[in-house]
Image (tube, rainbow, N blue to C red; front, side):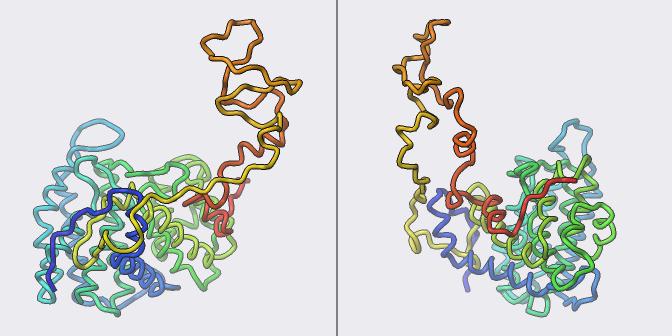
Amino acid sequence: MSFVLPTKRLQEPGHIEVFKASDAYRKLVGFITTIGQAVRSRCTSEACPESDAIKRMLAALDTLDQLVDSTPPSDAQGRFGNPAYRTWFDKMVEQSDELMASVLGETEPSALVEVALYFRESFGNRTRIDYGSGHELSFVACLCCLSLVGVFGPDDSIALCTRVFDKYLKLVRKIQTTYKLEPAGSHGVWGLDDFQFLCYYWGAAQLLDQDFVKPSDIPKESAARANSSDYLFFDAIHYIFQVKSGPFFEHSRYLFDMSGVPAWSKLYKGLLNMYKDEVLHKLPVIQHFYFGSLLSIDLEAGPTATAPTTTFRKLPKDFASNPNTPTWGGAVPSRDGSVPSAVDPSQVTPGSGVQPMTAFPAQGTSATSMASALQGPPTEMRTGTSRVAERGSLAKRTPK
């Protein structure tokens, strides 16, 4: 098999549909779900087979961890972006080929050109000094490619999560705190996590088929502390408690909402759908992903690369004639229901009583009409967090 230097291929919204039908998408989703099934009901601290390839990968991550220790942050002040990160990044890039060559061994050395690039893209962006779920995806792509060329086998599935991915998480969290990396594309309080995602999906898989720890324990710091060494899910929450202050429901609203879900099985299923919606199907994230021969895409094949159409909510029959209907760019009905002539706002004389064109509802609009106007887009138009919640997987809760 011939290997090529991976390149970015996705540039416009219509390419997302092509990506969904691609070889790369099928392999990535298949790898992610396979690991999820492998760690079902298994603790991180539980013993598992560790092949020589797993040990070589762990050694590579240990080397990068030591680079952090030997590259202290500078004295630069600021909330985000310590410039010493760029020094660490350059050192990582310089050693990346050698590290991945050691992992590949004699299995498929010519695959280095692809594997090493995914590895380099796994630790943040040198220019922006940020890190996000797209970089996490690059690391998963690196592990996936190593599996595709035969470095990792089926017996390594558990260790890839509970040993390799766990060490990767500890490394990137150390990088984040040491160099104050900015979250890349974070949704803030309405996002699942500032930096990671798959630790929650694979962590939910670990929590299946047990009732000792329940979703209602998610907001509890004591539960996170007690279970962080056994479950990736609570290890991630424990990290949040270390780096954020204040009530949990304020800084991690979406995780708090998850605590109202009755079973881990619902979270496990919902998180996969959410990962597709918020990471794999989002152009701002996936446009930075690289495609080579192991994870390939053919933009000329599959669905036509055109922007998706938008479906609008059907309006009621009396929408135009109803005096309580909000108006956009037209005259605003007065309290008695009469509609004055629309005038340019610049021509309105103060105190004249003439109403200019406006986008706001009429004064005195009924509460029912206002609620209807503010309820947002219909279900079929919503994506990501809203869709997962509306499927019943993640119900909002009110803090007590």
